[in-house]
Image (tube, rainbow, N blue to C red; front, side, top):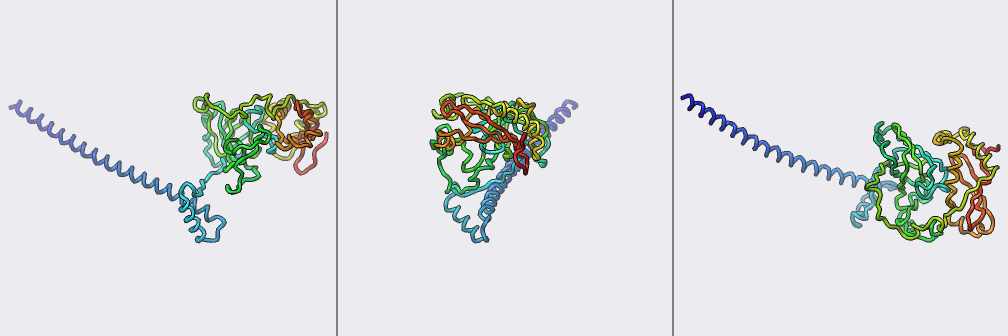
Length: 360
C-alpha cells in the first residue's frame, strides 16, 4: 500500500512538474513575442524620430532668411525633386571649447601638425560638459582634434561659388582638387589634426605639435590609436613625398641677430603685461629658450605664401616679413638668399593691446 501511494505521489509530482514546465515554456513564448513587438515599436519610433529630426533640420535651413511658409514649401519641393542625395541638410554641432595657441594669425601657422613640436596649445572645455569627460585620455600619448577653420576668408561661401582646385605650397602654386589636399578652404571648413598630449587635468587639455590658429573652435577630441590609425602601406603623390631638401618650402638655416635676441628677451620678460591672455600662453612654456626653439622651428620652413615666394619683388630685394606669436610678439625677418633660403631675424616688438609697439 505504501509503495503504491509513493508511486502515485511521484506520478502526481511528475505530472505537476510537466504542467509547470509547459506553462513556463508558454510564458517564455509569450514574453519573447512581446519583446519582439517592443523592439519593433522602438525601431519604428527611432526611424520616425530620425526622419522627424531630418525634416526639422531641412525646415530650419529653408526657413532661415525666408519670409514665410510658401518659400519653405517650395524649398522642400525642390529638395524632393532633386532626391535625398542632393537635399541640403544641417546637423547641430557646437564647439566643446576653444584652443588657445601660440599662433596669433593664419600667416605663420604650420601647414601640417608636428612640423613645430614646440607649438603648444591649451583647450578648456565648456562648463556645461561633464567634469569627467576626458577621464582616461591621459593614458594616450597623442590625440586627434576636430575643429573649425574659423578664420577662413570664404567661410560660408555657397558651394556653387567655391573653386574646385586650390594652390598647393609644395607645388609652388600648382593647383590640385581641394579634396586631394589639406587646404582649409573646403566645402565644410572642418580641420583634422593630431597632437601630442602633454597633460590632462579635469577639463583642461595641453597639447604640443599643433597647427591651429589661436581661438580655433574645437568640435571633438579623439584618442590616437596606432594599431588602426597607422597605415604602413599608405601611398601619396610624388609631390607629397618629395625629399625635404628639394621642396620649395625648405629653409637651410635660421639666424637670430644680437639685436633681435635682446628684443626677444625683452618681449619674453614683459609678455604678461600685454593686456590680453598672452600671460596664459606664456605659462605653457618653461623659459626663454622655449621661445627661441619655437621661432627656429616655425621659421625652419618657408611660411610665406606662394605669391610672396614667387613675386618679382621678393626675388629682387629683401622684403621684411612679420611673424606674430603668443598674442603680441611681432617678429621681423628677411630671407637673405632666395636660393639657399637663409632666414635672418632682424627685430622683435611687444605689441600691447590698444598701444603702439613697445620699445626697449
